[in-house]
Amino acid sequence: MKKIAVFTSGGDSPGMNACLRAVVRTGIRNDLEVFGIMEGYKGMIAGEFRQMDTQSVSNIIQRGGTILKSARCKAFITKEGRKKAYLQLKKVGIDGIVAIGGDGTFTGADIFMKEYPDIKIVGCPGTIDNDLYGTDFTIGFDTAVNTAMDAIDRIKDTANSHNRLFFVEVMGRDVGYIALRSGIATGAEAVLLPERHTDYDRLITEIEKNYRLKNRSIIVVVAEGDEMGGALKVAKTVGKKFKELDIRVSILGHIQRGGRPTALERVNASWMGMEAVKALLEGDKGVMIGMVNNKVKRTTFEKAIKNKKTMNPYLVELAHLLA
Ligand code: ATP
Image (cartoon, rainbow, N blue to C red; front, side, top):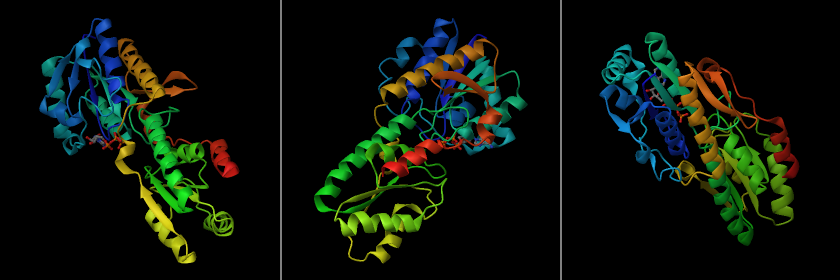
């Protein structure tokens, strides 16, 4: 292997820069030429490649977002699109690729490698949702949880001053990892998750007990994919039951995607980036590098995409027990 490329794809997440920095530097220190592909598969098809040197990734470890930019690319889903991408890679002489992205990115990479087996692809899990099997943490997750925690702490201050009932919506259309951890970390009275049936009666009892009778503020953290339909809908439903309550909704939205990555994020993302290049140098391909029990672990793309990650039941218990 002489030339490798790296790209970021799908939704951006804090820590992607740390990961690509590690890929570039590990590659160069192992005598590889390293290219950055702009805007994921879109740039691959368009031939938007930039040769990277160690300086090109200086001063980015602390920055959110991705200097290579990210994009969603419909053309790569077609055979013709992938052929164009292959020809562009061949023109530069690229033999190996590190793809930083989520399950869609790995699905595309898997299909591509079956069509063009001479190009080896290894993945690093870049998504704030933490929804990939084969890793305890995806790149961006820890920062998103900390951002949500910080925002909920602030909301809690004002909720306490006015004895308000707040429904705070955090990101997580299909999975509730951000909601669960930020809910535990902020001492939320309830956490509503897409993976679990929402116990509406329990929620009502909790509100009755704490808010109406003791005149206390309440924070309910709602993952956007909760079965009741997100914070606005939950607030509306609960509002019908408690007409006199001062109910507020706060949707945290895209602030959870940005910001300086946490120390844990920077370290894990760097470690996974280094391991991805090592995997390519060893001739491995079609694997995602994950972090399992504080060690790097390789899982095939197929497993990472198809297998469902199970939510830690102890954390769910903890959220209920301490609420
Ligand atoms: P996130 O979890 O943040 O959404 P992701 O990697 O899952 O990240 P997607 O938009 O689903 O984000 O996928 C990124 C890109 O991967 C798509 O824009 C597309 O170019 C490519 N891709 C996704 N699915 C396929 C597929 N079935 N075949 C080929 N390419 C695909």
